[in-house]
Length: 196
Image 1 (tube, rainbow, N blue to C red):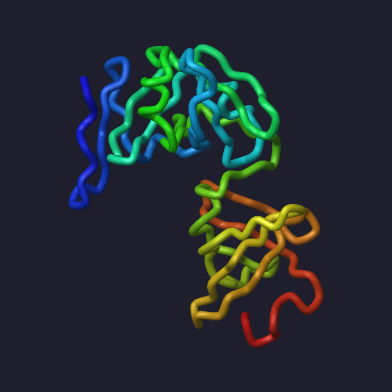
Image 2: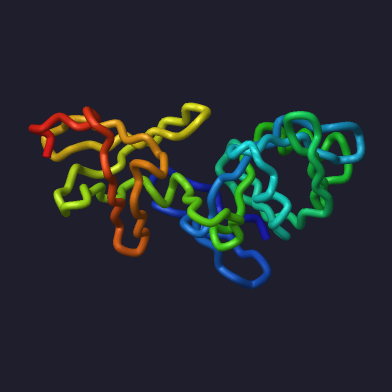
């Protein structure tokens, strides 16, 4: 069964996988297929996180092509390859078939994400309220900027001002995903006195 085409007037799409309904909200992008690798259906892929553990922990991956349609595939093989990864998916066994998924996005179920202790994913942090230790609200995280050494959280205050918060343990005291909040201890000079 082919999943329905994604249309602009539909908020989410559904696909049927192993008799279980999967919604767009259940999936998260983890990488992209770059190109075929060889003639037997192997695929060269990149991981958005730079690590391959999300691929390795997934039994099933979901491929979203240019049309927006999503198809599920069993992950048969996974291996690191230079600065990328090689995948072999059930049903993709030829160069022609692997060309059909070139540049497609790779998704997995959110509940299959592999994480380290105190590790959070961007999709979990966007929208969190950011508070000082005394309870004063600074604003909400609207964007995350990767910098190499640590991410920077862009916090938009109610007055429209942007506050840049480094994602380091010295600053971020607590992340409460269920409560929808992050508590920070700002570094000296990080926040203008009138921003709170």
